[in-house]
Image (cartoon, rainbow, N blue to C red):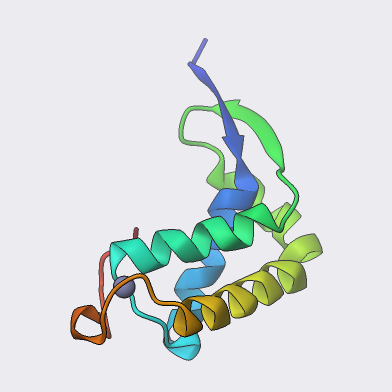
Length: 102
Ligand SMILES: [Zn+2]
């Protein structure tokens, strides 16, 4: 049997949605700010755990994401506002564009 793994697919959905929205949200795209945004959003969304074979969790996203799409978008928009208002570093460290997905 393949190794099973426990995944919070809400986390995957948040990251996935952020990739779509990141140019619109216009926040600093450094690792620190991106992870801040994920934690802000995930603390306000319900966890959704699934058990899958290792690496298979992405296949569960589509079915679930429709249900939570607007909640996830809301949480990301709110989080982006908070991060813009209270950045954790100076303006000189602002990363306008990053191709790295944190
Ligand atoms: Zn930053």
